[in-house]
Every structure is written in structure tokens, then in C-alpha cells.
Length: 431
Length: 145
Image (cartoon, rainbow over all chains, first blue to last red; front, side):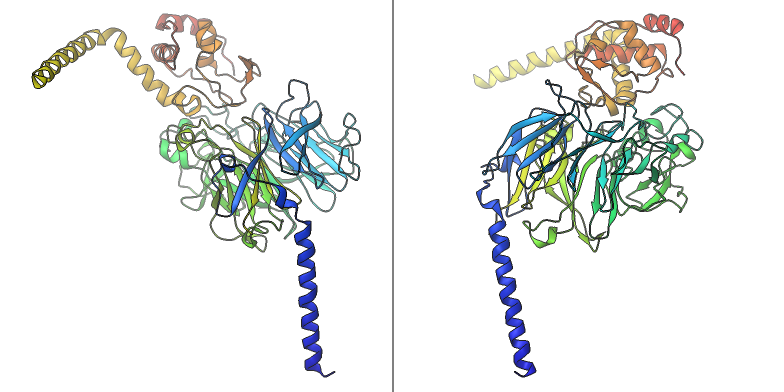
């Protein structure tokens, strides 16, 4: 056999293997049985996508995780009437799910599944539960407490977290202030010098998943200067933590001489940050102005809306319009959606309130394209219509408010609503 | 005939309108002023959190529509404006996480006007709060730091 023949044979072998692999992959894809609702669950989606209401729980459903066996773990903000705050739903082949069981007596926000454990957080602690080979929790009443004693105020109290591939957990400890003012959200109230609460909140803390009862002294302040983060995810492509910060409020109501109500509705940006150990994103001393594309000194700390902040603070990876409240962040690693979505980020914007008297905004799921682990290109609204109508969006009186995001093992995208407790599943239906 | 009827009804409604304007103008110096400035103060200091419809923000800023805090004890209500509100209590079965800052920089008359406005709008139908009532509460109010 000469070289030319060899290479020809090699090429056809590759083609054959690829064909066989794709057939196998296709056979594994169970999406065929799942049927979108006739009205796509009331959502507006790009061409080729459909949606269904998986369940209507009537609870404040925050974050969720879906197992390959079709169980859905959903964390509730508060325990339900039965006193339980983690729901376990099971999906029928058509995609509709029924309540299977419930456990956990603490309200909170986050739930995640990794390497044989289910992780869930209250507003001060993080727990883990061992699961069996079907990803079912073995002892729902006996979790192991891995993190305890975290500070929680009345605002920004929830503890979202993300898990890396090296046994670490990254926990949001939100600041219990808006902008670290002497009188929180007060008129003309200056910033507390140095904002000393940053020693124990307003950042991301890193703990180990294999150690119990860790608190501040066992953890590491991984990144600081972050007001509050609800959407967090680990990017597998560049092995890095990404977070969505909830930007500060009340620029006009605290500083009416410096900011009009319109400026205050637009500013500051809701920022996506790529975090490395030791990073400082600058809260409360600065905010990011997505219109000027600058880091601006906060009015509480000598700013006037124009003065730029110290360059030592990190820049956001991407900036979005103000006050839209990003509650869910998910890097899409599935194969069901078209190729452009792979490794990009979905962001669930819970919807604004601090834009009043300007019309409110958000209440949708956005897609942010990524390339090589970095945002690449403009974001676009992916799923809209949760609020019920443009008028309801403008008034801030949304029927449903997107919160948590999860990817099914078949590549479907799940979205929770923490207002009425609807769980949505978005699928790609084009063949 | 039809035309004639139209003209008559037009004249009739014009007279009605004029009469209305007249009464409004007459009563303006007394009750009218308080109502107008109450709305202005609401829009300047309250609306961004409690929203244009007084409905608040779920889980964050309490609604002002028919809640016990708005319709009930006047002293308690006046104190909320003077001291702000950051207690972890449920309001009519729901909890709200946001901090309301003190608004003690408002004058007695302004607080009376805005609370009267709130108690008479957003489908509320409660009695007014007077400047004297605010003054009395402020005098005995223990200031929070």
C-alpha cells in the first residue's frame, strides 16, 4: 500500500467512526419525547426553540439542578407549608414533573450536584448530602455541614455558590449595605471610611468541599469589592470563576444633585466578572458606568459621577444595563442547542425595581456569546415573556420572574421563577 | 334636531366644568395644597422604592396598599418616616429585606402631607395625618442612630 492509499483509507476510517459516534449520540438524546407546550409556556424564543412548563410549584423557587435520571432538586427561598425548602420533582417522559419528595428545613437559594454530593445553602451555612448511584439523596435529614457562621443581613443575605474541579467551593457573602453609607440608602449619607465590613462580606470566600464546619478562619477571601452575587458559575473552558454582581442602587435618591432619575435608572452596570484569587472589584468605592465605559468613583467616597476610580480595581468581563438583577448564570456545555450556544453564558435577569420612575426592565433570560472563555460579541435576549406583557414589565408587575438556571443531561435549559414557582424547560426542536 | 341637542349638551358640560374649576380654586388654599405637595414629596422621596402604584417590590420594599402599617396606628406610621425602617418583621404575612433610611429631614408639614397622600391614594381610604400629630410624635421620638 502506498502512502496515498494509506491516507485515503485513514480518512474513510475517520469518517466512518465519526458517523458511528454521531448515531450513538443521536440515540442517547431523549428530547424526542418531550413536547413543548402549545404556547411555548408563554415565552418568546429564537426560531427553532420551544418551551414547556415542567411544573407549577406555587413556591419561591430559586436555584435548581437536574439529574440524568430526571429528578429536579429545587431550592426554595423559604420553607413551604410543610416546613421543607428543597423540593424533589421527577420528570415523566413527556417532560412534565410531579413532586416526589421534599426535605431541608432551611430557606436559601443555591443547590448543586457534583461528584456524588448534593450541595445546598441556607443564608448562613452550606450543607452537603451524599447521593446514591441514581443521584438520590441517601439521608435527607442528616446533611454534613461544610460551612457555618457566615454573616447575613436583611438584604443580600442569600449564599449563592459555585464549585470548581479541585474540591473548592466559592461562596457569595453579600454586603448588608447598598453602598456602605453611614445611613444605608440615606440622603447625602457619606461612605463609612474604608468600609470595614469588607473583612467578612462583600466578596467571594473559598472553602473546601471535603472539610466540615468551616467558617471565616478556615476560608479564604478569594475576591473582594463585590456587593452581592446571586448568579455564579465555574467556566470549564478556562477553569475560572465567573459571577454576576448586583450593582448598587439609589444614585438619585441619595445624590439628587449629581444624578437625574434617568441616569439613576440606567446606572450603574450589572457586571459580569471573571475572578482570580486576590481580585478587587471596587465596591463600594466605585461602580462601573457602562455608558462612559469607565470605572467611576462612588459619590459616597468623593465621586461626582465623572471622576474615575483607582485603576487597581478589576474591569468587568461584560457590562449590562442597570438594576436588572442577574440571578442566574450558566455556561452552556450541552449539545442540544445550535453550535453558537456552546460554552456561551445564559443569564437570568430577575427584573428591576430601582429604575422607577423610569419603566422597569429585565424579566428575561439573556444569551452572552463566549469564545475561548471570554465574552465575545453582543448579548441578546434569549427567552422573554415571563412578565406576561410589556406593560407588566414596565410597571414592574411581572407574572413570573426568572431566577435560577440549570442544564439537563440532554442539553435542555431549565429556568425557575421565584414569584409563582413555575419551572420552565427550553428545548431546541428543529431537526 | 340632533345638532341642537349636541350644542345644548356642550354648553351644559362647559358650565359644569367651570363650576368645578371654581370650587377647586376656592378650596385650594386649605386642603388642596397639602394634597398637591404630598404627591410631590411621594414622587421625590418614596416612589423609587414603593413604586408609582404604591405596590412596593416583592420581598424587598413593602406595599403601601391597604397594609396595617399604613392604615393603622398613626404614631407608628409617622415613626417609620422619621426613623426609617430596618426591623425583621413580617408585614401582613410577608417579609421585606430592604432598609428604609430615615426621612427626618422632611418638615412636619411635609411628612403630614405625604402620609395623608399615601393614606388617601392607592385605593386607601384612611383619614389624614396632621402637622400637629407629626410634631407631637417628633417631640417624643427617640432618635435611632
